[in-house]
Length: 359
Ligand code: SF4
Image 1 (cartoon, rainbow, N blue to C red):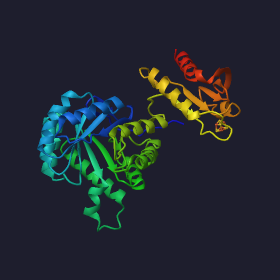
Image 2 (image 1 turned 60 degrees about the vertical axis):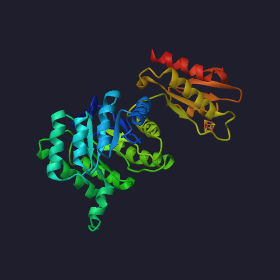
Image 3 (image 1 turned 180 degrees about the vertical axis):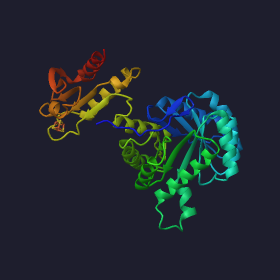
Image 4 (image 1 turned 45 degrees about the vertical axis):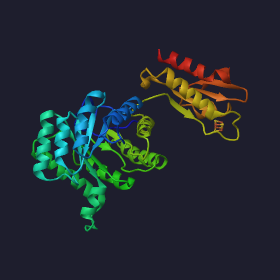
């Protein structure tokens, strides 16, 4: 099965193209004070290294808007400015060279203000993400008990889009985030049937890494499986590098992107007489390191199995693998055993076969 992605327009965020026909891109957000360009730059550089493809920064006041001018020329990935409440900050961010804005329809909505922002963005040919957040809508509409939150979110996005389009502005990306998976998924599904703008996916305030990883994988994964979503951000309370790591794992698990060797590792059971986890980590480290400069789409699926009896059969879909015995391991290819090797040779043997198969 392959995922059939929803048809969308293509929107450029700097050099990154977002929409059908382009890879689902990975975003994150800095957690430093944007007023401190050095700290923010340091974090962006680390995120770039980790694989972040679009970075968003919070612009809470004039000083942080001004700092964007120092940050933008020194980074290699597109910079999005996250603006709330004050439309003048959006204008300042545009003037400082950002590659896009995220606006919240819940707090910047006056027609004249939105018009001024849309015209400034149009002039610089940069997009606006209409970033609907359930938290901004609940208070305003809590009296309307009979209306579902997802419908309020969709309505807010559509109304905002209508307003932007009335200014002849069409460089739009949309997100509809709630902290509830069910409401988020419902909102994106409903919205995706209504228009062709690309979608930025995320579960907002998903939680601490252990909880947020699971929530994001379920919510973002459920949508991606249906072909919905063109760019993602995993929101975790903690180190933003983890956000990028998790986003990569989600995309790789769905075969939408490939960032490293695809490992299949058996969970082990009473038949296992070896440290499978240690071996799997060694193999991953070796393949990650040696293959870091190649196109991972060409990397084989590599299985690490804990016993020689069931291993090769259980991992028949893997291209290559090893099944560990007590003192040795069987090397197999497409489910067929090709040789017996010492356990100390596992990582090297798999790497050798991986490189050979790529030629
Ligand atoms: S491959 Fe062997 S050790 Fe691993 S779970 Fe299956 S039977 Fe158990």
